[in-house]
Every structure is written in structure tokens, then in C-alpha cells.
Image 1 (tube, rainbow, N blue to C red):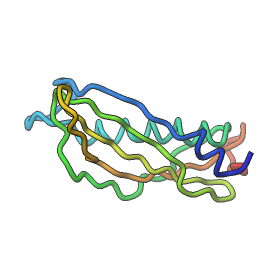
Image 2 (image 1 turned 90 degrees about the horizontal axis):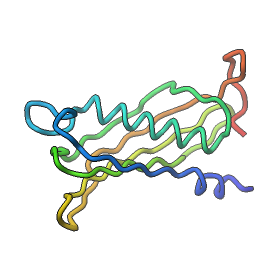
Image 3 (image 1 turned 120 degrees about the horizontal axis):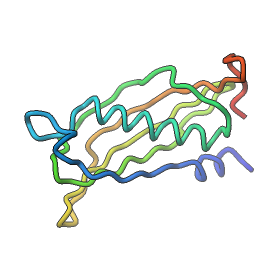
Image 4 (image 1 turned 90 degrees about the vertical axis):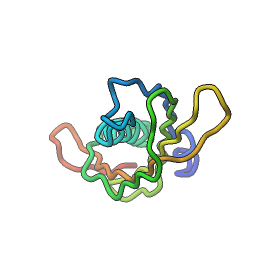
Length: 127
């Protein structure tokens, strides 16, 4: 299988409802909660690509361009954007959509870097 095919097969999409227990005093999703969800989707994407143990080594620039209000639905989409020898980078985008309309927009974008590790927790080739 080519790298492009593996990237396509590992692309991950997860939907969540934004409930009040995940929001701040502005009634929007906590930034830390968004980052936790993004790291989880990035981890799943990286694991599906490598089919090896992977660990997060960095979260790169994360841009919060739109608030995510309570009572909306979010879709988190993870896609591998770079493959190195022992590491890979995953782009995660969060889209927010209203529950009762067709309105949808990108709200958050971020990149996460993972390293594949062996049973001794040493880096190992991703592919």
C-alpha cells in the first residue's frame, strides 16, 4: 500500500455534542477540552496510519478562529500531513455546526507530532 493510500485510510472523523459541562463562563467550549479532543483524534489517526505504538511529542500551533458554543455539534477531522523516519505530523481541524440548521464552519486548527516507539519505549521507524 502506498503512503497516500495509508493516509487516506487513516483519516479519522469523530463527532461530539457540546454540552454545558464542557463550556466556560462564556458558554463556549473550553480551549483545554478542545485540545484534549484534538490530541485524542490525532493519536487515533497516527495509530491507524502506523499500526504501531505512538506517543505525542508536541502540539504545534493551534489556532482558535471561532468560538464553539454550547448546544452545537463538532466534527474533529485528523489527517496525516507529514511522514518522517520515526515521526509523523497530524493536522486536526474542528468544524462547528448548528444542530438545527445547515450552518457549518471551521473553528479550530492544530498540528500534533507523534513518534513511533517499540516495546522498550525507544523510537522506531513509522513505516
